[in-house]
Length: 269
Image (cartoon, rainbow, N blue to C red; front, side):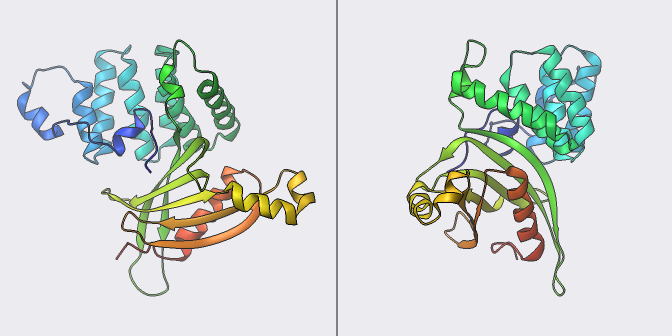
């Protein structure tokens, strides 16, 4: 099940019915002011460099355009430019401090820039916002997760073709589904295109109860049994690892990166 994500990052996964960037440019006079729609079309078409330039022109024309700042942060994330993503996401927050979508972009920006203390503090705020809601963020309670990070991974086998992947790491406010998925890593080619593979971090309550009975001291200390597995929309599946640990995104991320670096994604040629 695909996560319900807030904009701007959800536009990577869902169709918004936007015309292409080239079509929008063809329809507009050369003297027309820059618009957010043109940048969104470029971003949706897999052209983050062009999208970033479009959003920057929007901000040059109107420095108070919070939407342009927010989407500029998203384009910078697609380019793995963490410091620039932080710059634009923090600017968007200054312009529109009550929009919770800005905080979701800022979490991913802090991740990309390696600012873990700021990232984790904002993750806690988002979880609190999801739990309590509020007049300024009714949609926060309806979302089940948010984009935590975008990052690249390279696979270089001893023989055969290499592969470059783009990974979107999703954090769920509460574990979802019968198998209790805590995090989902969506893998696609770095050149864009559809999703190739998903890797989930799970800890289901049924297996956990049996494990806790067999390991009472570890369970009492806060440890759980986690499983990391992969699957495709076509029904392919791989069980990667079963282990004992804590809910620690950075530890899970390191395992996923090692998996992607050491073996090919099953659906990739």
